[in-house]
Length: 329
Image 1: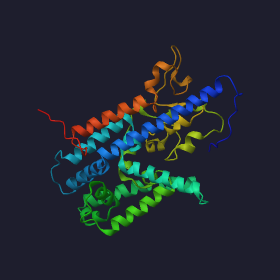
Image 2: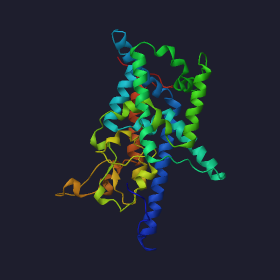
Image 3: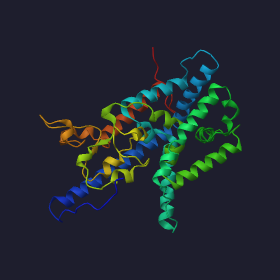
Image 4: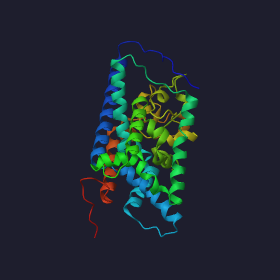
């Protein structure tokens, strides 16, 4: 396994300090852009996660009951998010999911508390992380089987997602105490480990991870250009994966772009822009000219373009809280 080590330091003076300062400004801009997009979707589409997964449950329930499948609103949300994921990767998970945003806020609060107290950060061994990452698939299969058998309605009132949906909608009527207790346990996990719900428990995340993603939307690296024993991309990844598009675990990538920001070699990006006559594999997966700035996976331009497109899709299918559906015809 690759381990992090100190990279050779460039001499003080010259272009190094200016480049370092510019890089820090870029990272700060990317961080605030992501925060702004997350806040926007949290306010406008807090129920998008629940609606999409209701589409999954609806499909399995109708198939199990041998009933016709109609294109209901839940199914429209599911189809829209799956199509968006195929084209743009798991942008929804990294930027638009209200549950993921809640996890980021809670983890940031936990980090603040840990910085003020002697309480250490909880570290999970890599073998344990790999095992726990499979739990969400077990949950997905279990829920799908329950829906197919027509038994989901008997246990759905205890779901932590129902409790969260109740909070975001402002209506807690009919939600069992067990659902709030489970939501509290999930929130505790979010405090202790970044994106723990997304990585270990989210059944909708399990669905997204199984979707194919077009190559130009996959964060990846050219390993031959990596600094020896660096590992910074893995260390900052909230779901503990390496940015290798051909790896089996790459479906776990939530497209947050933090690996690209952390790479000291600028060796991680969405696209390869080789010079004329070069083989694509002979250069790192990164921009090679300032005119390609929009292709930076973490750049504000491409992030905001995706956010606007996704919000437009949500508006069109009536999946936003305050915006009415776009009238057709």
